[in-house]
Amino acid sequence: GENVEQHPSTLSVQEGDSAVIKCTYSDSASNYFPWYKQELGKRPQLIIDIRSNVGEKKDQRIAVTLNKTAKHFSLHITETQPEDSAVYFCAASIGSGGGADGLTFGKGTHLIIQP
Amino acid sequence: DGGITQSPKYLFRKEGQNVTLSCEQNLNHDAMYWYRQDPGQGLRLIYYSQIVNDFQKGDIAEGYSVSREKKESFPLTVTSAQKNPTAFYLCASRQQGASTDTQYFGPGTRLTVL
Image (cartoon, rainbow over all chains, first blue to last red; front, side):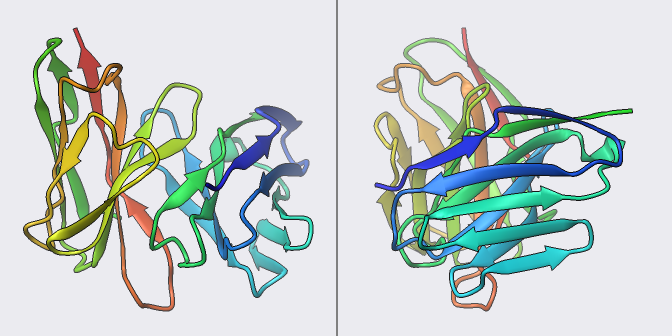
């Protein structure tokens, strides 16, 4: 089955700096890659996603890049703010159904924004 | 994602008891999912259903059961066969066949075995 590895497990950056979180996946059939933000005790919230026919997607301060050949994708947050502090999860679709058969998640990155 | 509700928010179970977690959605989504989250871990797929009266096992289905009698509802039963059921359980739904593949999560149920 699909396996998703996420690094680093903890990332501390100064407010205003950029943060990058990286994930790799094992199943070349995966075609949908969402990123979720989860605050303590809350539900995961989708922040950005990308499909396999696109190499990069940007939404204001957040961007995601995908390298299908290398089977890795990354989340980039620029101009970090205190409210960006949370746990971030990457995920990959199980198979090529765009997530219809579920998602496989990485173990998460705890992002800490230092004032 | 405010259209997905889960109850109860907290649930305590004695060993040997079965418990049922509720998940309801009013988003008219076809597909629904159950994930389990353990501390410091990512989410793992338990069961999913793409259509009423049909469901499939995920990666960690042992000790769990589900039903999908209505489009809006996808309850999860944690049976006594589940050896380590203490976890945060998250339900999600997804619109099938639309241009978006987004899974929206409910607020979760935190289950503790006493």
